Length: 75
Image (cartoon, rainbow, N blue to C red; front, top):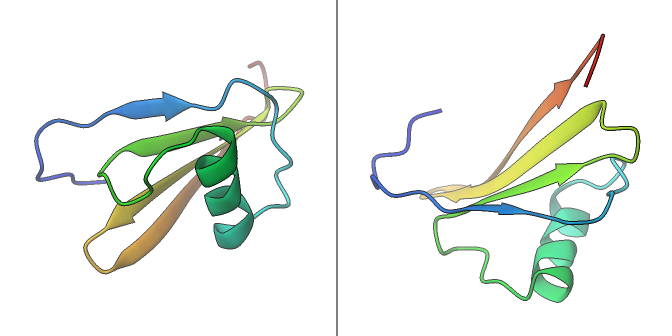
């Protein structure tokens, strides 16, 4: 990922998140759970209950993007 803005704020959602959620579901969590503006240039990080999956939602100039990572071993 390349972020030309220079300063990036990372917002971690404090509760476990359902990893079946995609763009619309994660946007709703950001709006209602974190009470944040989605297009502020920050990264919004979500982790599942077992801490084996992570999703990062962010806004680029052309739209929303999701990056996902699944850990095979460990946390």
